[in-house]
Length: 119
Image (cartoon, rainbow, N blue to C red):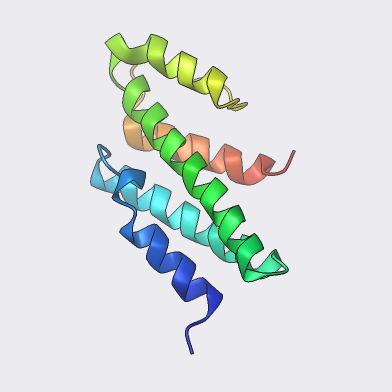
């Protein structure tokens, strides 16, 4: 029997839009973060439909984070990154270092998201 986790994780693993444009390190960090949270949300959900809805929202947020990191790390696209952050209501602090590496930025964002999830 296939459990709820397996189905959701397969869906995340097949979602190329989650990591498109990221380097290997950033992509791995993001997928691990999404999978970890998907498992937690799935466990907390009352029904399979609730789990699917929660994981869909989580994956959408992951795609937005991915896009933000890509935009921020290209200086000429920083205005677009700021606009995305505002429209997605990202509440983590923007980087102080204008030359932040994508992997460092991804790690910072995912750590912040994990510490402040649900606030």
